Image 1 (cartoon, rainbow, N blue to C red):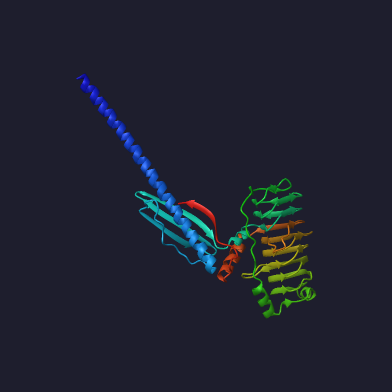
Image 2: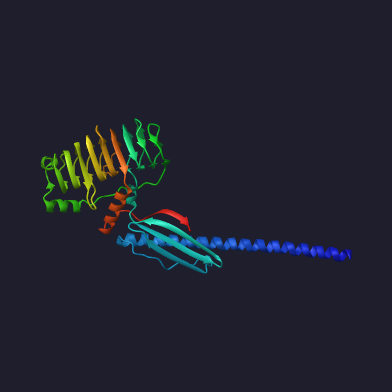
Length: 353
């Protein structure tokens, strides 16, 4: 009886241990299958991004919409789906299953990496210095160093590829340094030139442009094609203003972008002083300086130098209020009109569903 009881106890203990081992083995197997499904899903997500990048490099466009999945790690099923989220964004979803494990990995890709510059109130291709009585409602970005002097207020985040010296400024958001660079957006000036030529608002003389604009209310695309400095004062302009040289806006006035145009394009230095309000995107390749007066930009300021990269200095008294609707609308219209990028598509977000 004693031996029987001992044997029964030992048998029960062995069965209990074997059940635990079997459960642990099953758990480990499920975890392995889940991991295999995850890595297969991730591989398919990356494959989708690769196909888009390859097609874009070859043709300048991306029509790939998924399919042809990779069945790795003994996956029972896999798939690649691409969803167009509106130019320039695409959502790439890699799927995979392994027995009872289902995983999905998603990447958000942009075919217009330069467009990320328009996500900020101020974008600087190189160094950015903010000083004086400047208020920024939105984030600021620099591909170089970022410095603050005189107590400018930034009601948003600050991003830079280099260390940020924020000791002289007030930043309400977060400070991010060492971020990836954003290539400078390039604007095709041909439509502006052609429209101004057709409407008789193409000027080869800064003096003629000044006479047409100053102390006037105009609705037009004005293109000033001269290296001379253009000085405009007390102007109310609806449409857009392009200068291939420096530009001074003085006295006051309102500048409002129309349709898919930028409000101000300056292939040189921009100086603004007086009661000036700009509704739209300001695009400058040189220095930007604000003088006295209540200067307001409702949109964004893009400093995008060409081969001659210059620092961006925003000084004086100014308020820049970032308007995401203006930036998004301009990007979308540019995409519809066939704007192309000089950069390869890039993934900006990654996650698992």
